[in-house]
Every structure is written in structure tokens, then in C-alpha cells.
Amino acid sequence: MANSAPTVAEAERFETDQAISLKAKDIANLIKHSKHFIVFTGAGISTSAGIPDFRGPDGVWTLRKQKRDAPSKATSTLQAIPTPTHMALVKLQNRGLLKYLVSQNCDGLHRKSGIAPEMISELHGNSNREYCRDCGKEYIRDFRAVAPYTKTVTDHRTGRKCSMPGCNGVLLDTIINFGECLFEQPLKLAREHGKKADFCLVLGSSLTVPPACTIPEIAGKSKRGKLGICNLQSTPLDHLVDGESMRVFARTDDLMIAVMGHLGLEIPQFVLRRQLTVKVVMGERDRNQVILQGVDVDGTPSTFLKSVRLEGCRRPAVTEPFTLSFRMDGQEELRLKLELEFMGNYLEPNVEIVHSTKCSERLYLLEYSPYTREWQVVAKDYSRPSAQ
Image (cartoon, rainbow, N blue to C red; front, top):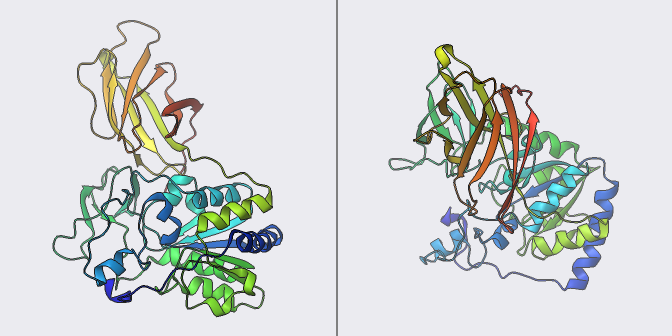
């Protein structure tokens, strides 16, 4: 916490554009020829999104140590747009170059940017993710799924209950506070990939918080592994980097834009992607229902809708799963017009989907550009994944 930060933060260093480009070329070459390339990220990759870091001159812990207020201009993690660094990592993942991502960040931007759930260890949790204490079921939210911590920082109850049939267990946030143990599985996977890595690139981390910081150290001390670090301040692992060209004092966006240029890869623009299942249940005496549920790519329940309105119904559905009743009145088919209202973190407008009652269940892929404020909707046949 604040006690772990110096009263006066170390000055940030900025290398020239030419120096960054030369080092980026060497890093790009290592990425291109590595067999198991991993990345380790810290708060520094999100500062250009308006989210402050912790130990920089205006970092959260630095200001707290100096008894100064945090900057009021900070962007909410819910409204922050993934940075060029986030999107570059998505591109490297999709091209098969990035084999695994280890992150200390809780802001949820990696998952939101498009990093697959099986490709990342969020060692310190995710402020948009909660899980059931009893059955372990996870939930992804478009709101802060964090406990109020009114009594103690070890009380992780969010106030919601598990919706799995027959469970109703207490939901807990996934945030790791200082002094708490990390979740076993993400840490285990991070260590395994650290050992397999032939190149580990650290982006925007001071590397001062154990045990997370031991992951790059594993790669740096390995005979076959190489370590690169991009951070504006020095780190305790600087002596392990593989030559001067692997230690970059720059903003992570500046480095990754240069790296992607040397790789000949374009950094994609951020698109908010959501998935929605629509299920029709035909009942006796024409008492029928349409049920809508947001899902993540691995089938994890995902909350991103505020309400759903069915044309012809007076009241919208406002709780999940969104369930609305309708009657066929002797017709062979109805085309159900469903108006979706979103959480609005990115000023998403409502969108309408039309679902035929002849289709018992369908998956709708929803893509939203925060730059044009337009939705693209694609319907697909749904094969239900086996979410854990």
C-alpha cells in the first residue's frame, strides 16, 4: 500500500524516439523467433487510458504517502478504453505470437480488450469479476463487482447471490488486497509459463510486489530465457535483462507501437464485444417465454444489460436472466422484437434484435465501436459451452 512507496518517487526517465525504435527492433526480433513468448503487465500500461499508476510521481500510493489527494481527472475503469499496448497484445495473441499474459492489474481492461480467459493470469484479481463461495461459479459484470469493505478488507462479499440452480451461495470479489494470498490456479499457471518462457517482456511494472514479481524473475534467471523490461522507473530486476537493448525507459504505448511497426502488424482499434443468448420456451396454454442471458466467450455469465423490452409488453425485464412472456394466439411463427438497454459505460445506444420463435436458442454477437457509437449484430446457431 502507501507504505510500500517512497515519500519522493524516483524520477521517470524518457529515452529518445530513435533509441526506443532501435530497442523495439531487437524486441520484435525476439518475439518473432521465440517459441514461448509471455508478457507481464503492471499499472503503467493503463495510465494512457486515464487510470493512475501506484508508484509514479502522481501514483496512488505516492500521493497517499505524501498525504495528497488523488487526481480528480482519473478515468473510471468502467469507462476507460484499452490502450494501444492492450490492443497490441490482443493482436499478438491472435497471431499466435503471445503464448501467455500475466497481469497485476485489476482494471479488467485485458479481458475487455479481447484477451482470451485461458490466456491470462490476473494475479491480483479483476474488479469486474466475482465468484460463488460455494460452487465456484464465476460472473463477469459491466459494473464494479467489488465488496464495500465496510468492516474489513478481508470481507470480500459483494452482496449478491449465485444464480446457479440449487446454489444461492454468497458471491465474493476476486480482488487480492495486501497481505492476502493469491488464488492458487492463476499463480500456478503464471509460474508454469514463466518456466517455459524463452522471452518475457515486462510492461509498466515496478516489479516490487511479491509473489507476482517472481514470474519475470523466473524467466530472467533461466538459462534459456531472456528478459526485457519497459518501465519509466528502475526495477529490482533490471540487472537480469538480456543486454542494454532489453531495458527500455519509455511509455509502454510508445514501445509497443514501435514493436508492432517492426513486426509489420497493425494495432487493432478497440471494439466492445458482447455475446447474448436468446432462448424460446413454449409452454402449455400458450404461456410462452423468451429468456435472454449475457455470456462470455467461455460461457461464463456476463452482465452487460440494464433491461430488455419486448414489443407488445408493457413492462421491461430488469433482472437476469431477462424473462418475458408472450402468446402465439394460433400463429405458427412470431418475430419477437427485443430492445436491449446497456449499462452505458461507453454511451452505448439501445439496439433492437428480432428473434423468430421457430429458433429455440440462438447466440447473438454484439460489437460496439465507442468511436462511432454504432452496434453491429450477428446471429449464430448456439452450441452451449461447458463453463466451469
